[in-house]
Each structure stands twice: as C-alpha cells, then as structure tokens.
Image (tube, rainbow, N blue to C red; front, top):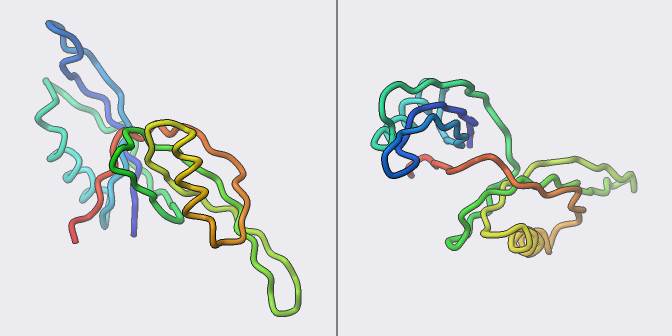
Amino acid sequence: MILYEIKIAYERQTGEDNPGKVKETYLVEGLSPADVEERLMGEISKYIFGDSELTSCKKVQFYDLITSPEGDKWYKARVEMITVEDDGKETRKKVSILVQASTIAFALKNLSAYLASLDCEIVSITRSPILEVYRAVK
C-alpha cells in the first residue's frame, strides 16, 4: 500500500454567499504522485470554485489504517512494537497507525482493541489534519 499525503489550497463555498480559500490535507493511495493528484482532483472537483493549488504531495508510511463507520476524524497514533529475538534480545520499532473515530477517546478504544493481541506500547495519539482517505479500488 503506497500512500501519499496531499495538501491542497482552493476556493470553496464556505458560507451562504462567499466562497473562501481553504487548505486541506488528504491521504490518497496510488502508484505515483501524478496518479494520486488526478484521483484527488476527480473526487473534490465538485467543491472547487476557481483555481486550486497543490501545495504538497509526499509519500507517507503507515503500519495500518483502522477505519470506523461512525468516525469523522483521523488520529495518528505512534506505537512501539516490541519483539523478542531467539537469543532473548528485545527490539523496539516505532510505527504510525492512522485511526478513524469521532473522538480521541474512541480512537484510543479502537486502537487498543486492534493492538490487544500484540506486544506493544502506545506512545502517542494526536488529531491528524487529514480530512479524508481515498483508498485504491480493489
């Protein structure tokens, strides 16, 4: 799974009369920056009035994405995975997991349930600026 974090600035109807400039962050799964930019513009073009500007497109890595149908926000969790080698040596690896939830409490609950069978520690969980995630069609 190759994911790109795309930041875009554009004019969108923000109130009753006036369009306003907004800056938003999206996560899009795809093969290349050009591919994900085209997919994102296809998804959000109906909301754009006038010019848009892609301000950033970078490849990001997440260990996993935990989705929730009632979630309307995304939270980025840093988790330290703990493994014990055959020789008894303990190794720790920090990974990022993206969790969809309506509140940080539900994000923590969903993350804890996901990690229940793994030997790991939750290092941090914060609200992500990601507005929406667009996965590749399977």
